[in-house]
Length: 156
Image 1 (cartoon, rainbow, N blue to C red):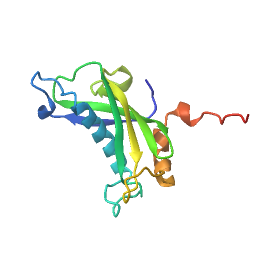
Image 2: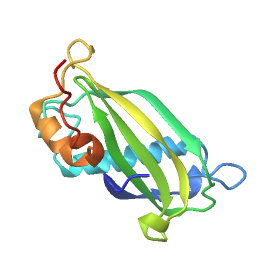
Image 3: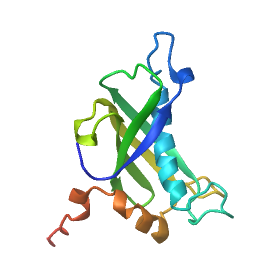
Image 4: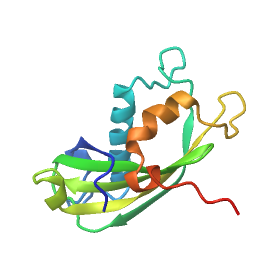
C-alpha cells in the first residue's frame, strides 16, 4: 500500500453488475480507466491534439493486471487510488487500488488492486515514442515518493 498518488471517485452503475449482482470482473478496468482519464482531463489532456495541453495524445495500454480481494455488490460510489510506479522513456506503469468510498482511504475495503502498463505512441507510425517534458512534469506528482527520491547510482 502507498499513500502516494491520487484518489478519484467513480460510479458503479446497475448495468455494471453481473447476473449474481456483483461488479463484473471486466468493469474494474473500466473504473480505473475512468479515474485516470478524469485526472488527466482536469490537467488539460484531450485525445484531440488540437485541444490537448500535451503533445502526447496517443497512449495505449500494453498490459493490465487485476487481483480481486472483495466483491462490490451494489451500485454507488467507489474510490480508485492510483499512482505511477515508474515512468520510463516511452512507457509508464500505474499502480492502483479500487477501494470502498464509505470510509477514509486508509481504512477502506480494498476490492481490487493491480497495475496498468501504458506506452506512448507516435500518432503517425504507432511506434513507441519518448514522453514529452510537459507530460513528465505533469506526471511528477503521481510518482511514488520512494522512487522520486532515490539517489543516483555511484559510478563504478
